[in-house]
Image 1: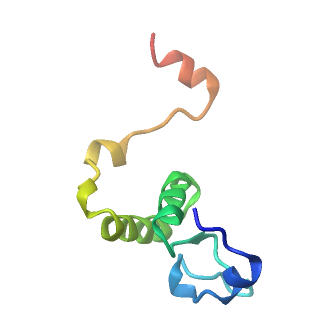
Image 2: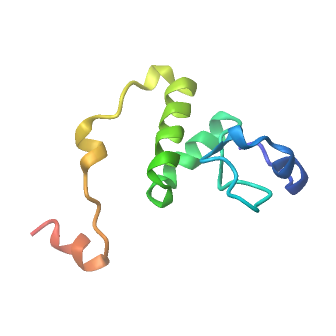
Image 3: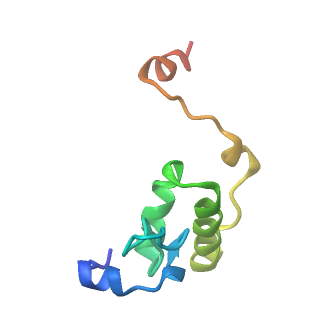
Length: 91
């Protein structure tokens, strides 16, 4: 992943972040400036707002056209929220 310095991140326009830059903030949460940052944003989608998720998905679709669509099953999958739920999945 390309390393972003604090100055570079602050200089990035709001459109290069999923969800833009929150009011009063100098930087956004999920930079979408290269493929590595898009992949990283995808891995943290569970912390993103619905609007941020949509922007991350759109950026990923554009950056990785060969990957194809995520299935509806993947998008609707409920991941276990706790260790106990995880353990009970196999029973």
